Amino acid sequence: MAEPSYTSLPTSHLPGSVPAVITEERASAVQHDPEANMQIFPPNSGGGGGGSKGGYQTLTSPSDGNGPAPGNNWNGTFSVSSYTQYFNVDTDDVVNRLTSSLYPTGDFFRKIEANPDLYGLIWISTTLVFVIASFGNCATYLTSKKTDSTISWSFDVNYFQVSAMAIYGYAFIVPLGFYLLLQYFGSRVGLIHFWCMWGYSLFIFIISSLLLVIPVDFVRWTITLVTGVASAAFVGLNLKSHVELNDLTIVLVAACVLQFALAIFIKSWFFH
Image (cartoon, rainbow, N blue to C red):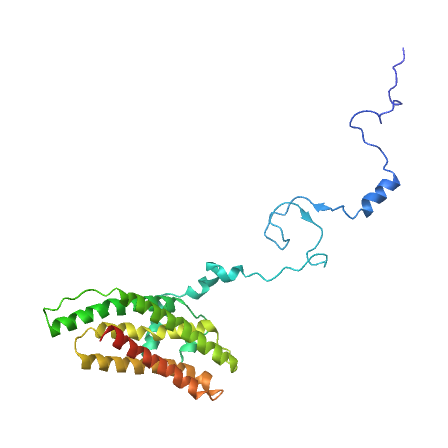
């Protein structure tokens, strides 16, 4: 008996069957449907310029003009990692810049041109705050005991508050003011360079504060005058090249006067 043939049985009604032919109307609808979005597989997990870090990649480019352009991102301004480059200095760099502030030659901006730092500004300012506050109290103690040993003496905590406001305010606001002023007259020196230079100019005040403990007023004033002249010379010589281009001698004089005034303020307030 002959075997029955099943080749002629219809299969379109079976579950899971796929039509052999797609009608032209459906094919046209798929090709022209604006909602259809082709995707690339497998997902691009690399860090290349694809844009997405994971998942499917659409063929639509973000620069094709269909979507809004990305706006400016201010997150970097408030990110600590954005400022790590200004602390990329080693011990040799810091020592070299500290030495330059004690022996002013007018080339400090050239030394920091490629790598200005904020490490000196923050470290020196903070150290100076604690030094003048603590040694100022020590100086008043020695002076009071020298005058009358029976006088009671108490530690003045307000010295820390005054020193913090004065030193931090001077170290950050004064360079910012000169930066804006010189930018108006065409200077191209960056703000970080100004902060760096003024920060290292305060190092000599740390040394002088240690000597101002000596309870002899004549010696204290002598140290103050020498400190004021040295710090003013450091700032003045380094600003000279940027001021001479616009004949702004008054700006140079103002910077020197402010440095000298800071020395007088430290002596008068903390070591009187």
